[in-house]
Amino acid sequence: MVMSVLEEMRIRSLGVIDDAVVELSPGFTAVTGETGAGKTMVVTSLGLLLGGRADPALVRIGAKNAVVEGRISVPDGASAVVRAEEAGAELDDGVLLISRTVSAEGRSRAHLGGRSVPVGLLAELADDLVAVHGQTDQQGLLKLSRQRQALDRYAGDAVAVPLAKYAGAYRRLRAISNELDEITTRARERAQEADMLRFGLDEIAGVEPRQGEDVELAAEAERLGHAEALASAATAAHGALAGNPEDPEGIDATTLVAGAHRALEAVRSHDAALGALAGRIGEIGILLGDVAGELAGYADDLDADPLRLAAVEERRAALTALTRKYGEDVGAVLTWAEQGVARLLELDSDDDRLGELTAERDALRAELGGLAQALTDARTEAAERFAAAVTAELASLAMPHARVSFEIRQTEDPEGVEVGGRPVSYGPAGVDEVELLLAPHPGAPPRPIAKGASGGELSRVMLAVEVVFAGTDPVPTYLFDEVDAGVGGKAAVEIGRRLAKLAKSAQVVVVTHLPQVAAFADRQLLVEKTNDGSVTRSGVKVLEGEDRVRELSRMLAGQEDSETARAHAEELLATARADR
Image 1 (cartoon, rainbow, N blue to C red):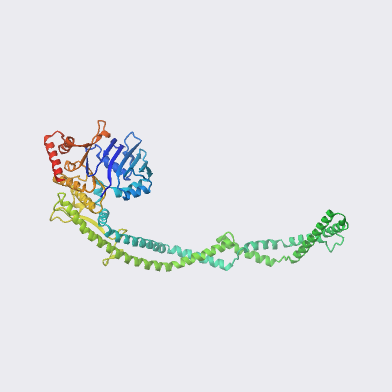
Image 2 (image 1 turned 45 degrees about the horizontal axis):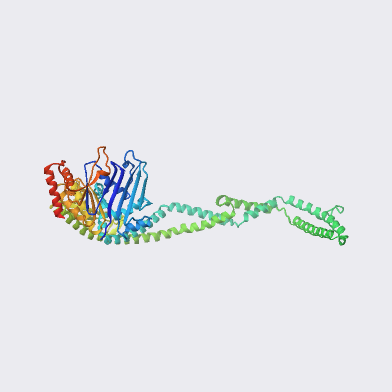
């Protein structure tokens, strides 16, 4: 099976590293060097390539930015390739180029296959490409949530399938519970709102306004309030147009127009233009007669009725009282009433909704309890297999009598869901608290690894867990940052041997200070500083032959030229070669 391989990293202006290239290869690579030489920058650089947090303090003093570039060969069809191509990245002959730039001001940029991409995309790819483990990861394993996640990861679909069903039911239950909480906590507010709506609707219903009624009443009130003046004006206008019976000698417009029409009618046959004017004057006479008639009717119909005016003003006052509260005009008041009826129906239906939601919540709680039990059963079965596999690995890591087990427990909670006949607390991942226990030797009671494991034991448990994962959920590349901390002697040899075995199925890069581990590496890189305290391109080199013996001697005794140390180093290398 073709696996992804991290081929090379170029690091510029990062920490103590000025400009260096780390050339990697398949199999087991050990990175060694003096304390403070910059070995950890290898881990930091890879972390940046994989979307880790950009810390401007990492930028070398005097530099504008730090740059890390990586080359990863990826087989066709790998999920990382698919995701990268979806983002517009291009592969260079099966090699994926990744770069990350961090400025001294804290800005960060990421490029993938020549295309600028969000940093979050690098983190997505990391899950499929590289597993990084260091001291912080060991501390993370002490958290119960991480131990549960490790068990779930090992179990695979056996836990993932019931967990997905449980998570779906859990989300539905939370949504319904939140809606119930909102309805019940807002009961008083809803009651007050309903009372206000009923009062307003009753007030509007009592007045019974009509659409446009306020405009009609305003016009009628204006007319009734000026009835005498309107009647006098209409009468005067009528007299001017049609004459006043009390003044038979008066001259009116109708009489004058009629005289003009007669004068032209007598001669219109002699000139067509004058005849046309005579016709137009005749039309004016007809129009004057019509208007005069309407004025007479208007004056007769106009009634200065004070009772009607009082009724109109009273009605207008009632409408004004509504528009002050519910809208700027009668149309807006009617709209408010329509919306109020709909909202009142909604509020009144909350009681029915409350019953429905309560019933649905109770049913979901019962369903969730059953799903939680299935999830617990799946975890319990997987825990036995996982513990047995890790225990077997510990035997290969100089802990032959150690026993690993899991405790899966629940916490009683009156407000929880019922599992196994008792109410227990629950969360998005189920009802289980999962804790990894270690009994380091026969007769020792199993204790949480946070309390029962030394630093060296914890390192080996961490490595054993990762080796077990490698057999069930393989990752192409593993990077261990001093996972052998606190270990020495025979245990260190066994760790080196186990890492070499893991490297047969994956690329393994180990930053180590132990010669027993480094000796088992297929390739050893030395990181060393120059006289000015920086690591340059020549400061990261592949050790072979005599150079590797000298470095292992230094790691053993701090003396490269010690004959005893050299003999021991050669012995370590011979043992490692024979073991392969």
